View 1 (cartoon, rainbow, N blue to C red):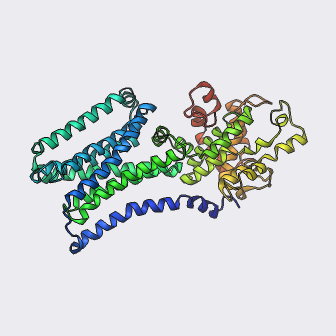
View 2 (cartoon, rainbow, N blue to C red):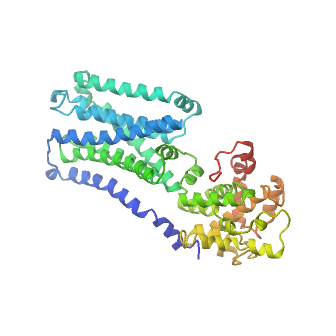
View 3 (cartoon, one colour):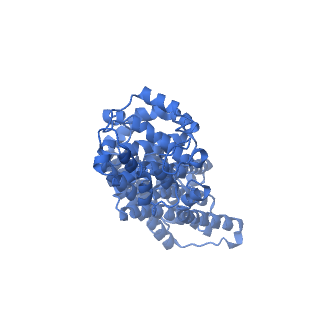
Length: 494
């Protein structure tokens, strides 16, 4: 049966291998650090300045590549949050490059090692700060100003970092040695990085859970590794094995993010689009960003096939998501619900135009043809969504709570809850949209119908949740909002 625990577990297992890799990447260095710190005899001293320079250079190269990609993306997309991501990567590249060049014996003498430690701490502070700023909802005016002056902002920040590098390397004595033994400074930077990186990790992981997009996950992973690197840097003794670990944690953080960008590019997504999608804060937008190309292609085909229901799938998916959120669905269930709702009418691709676009009432024979679209849609996508919640929504969205629906005559709890949610969303948007055979119902009449059908056509629990969110949907996502140009999201398949 669709919607059973086994089906939901199958859905959750889709991302398990990916998550396992991330857990290992984040967990093994942290576990190694803790083991070395608790076994002093094994925590050997490894004084290899040349090795330090090359490891730091690798981190700088990765972050510089990310800075270049994000910087170009910020210029092209006019997106303030992409700009903030770019500034974070630029900060890491700049400060950590100075950290590497300040390795004793290269450009700076050992007695001026304060520039070494100060640069390392500043790289983490500013990287964590800009990552966090990209993950929160800033006021509209500052965001607009950042967009307007994005080229200037990046140029000024790059110039400031170059100025810092020149001053730090040419005049290393300008950073007082006692600063790196000042507990207020050390503990302050420790606390700032830990708080900022933990916050950004939670926010980006929430985006990953909603959208399923790997880029959200790798940025969350990078934030975790920044957190760990700050701990390793602060508590590790210089040149000891445990101290070396933070360099590899940073290398892992930025290599993972760079790998995520490259992976999305290999799949056909431009880097600008990838980074812009990464900055979506609205949960509905995050889930929609996670639609695969196959799903988007089917949705576009259906839109082209049935012009009278333009945007119907997107609006039903959005309303279903809002209802699901009200019912406290987990992110994976919301994503499955959204994808099934988006494609719930995909079987209509095979319905003849004469039936699909008929302006008058359907006769019995024509209605039987229409009634075949749920099973036809389930057959079309059976291999892609076998045993899944998505397929349940596609096949059963015309079932009724009282058992009077089709194709299987399911009733009550036998209909998966996700399907009951999608059914309510489907009917309401259909009533509120103009079709070939009638004009759209008014909001008041449509709401009255939904209330009257609670307990017969619809699950009363779903209707209660629907009534709690319908005002927002009407204002932000409905057909009227689309026509007036005030819709929050553009239709996916338009």
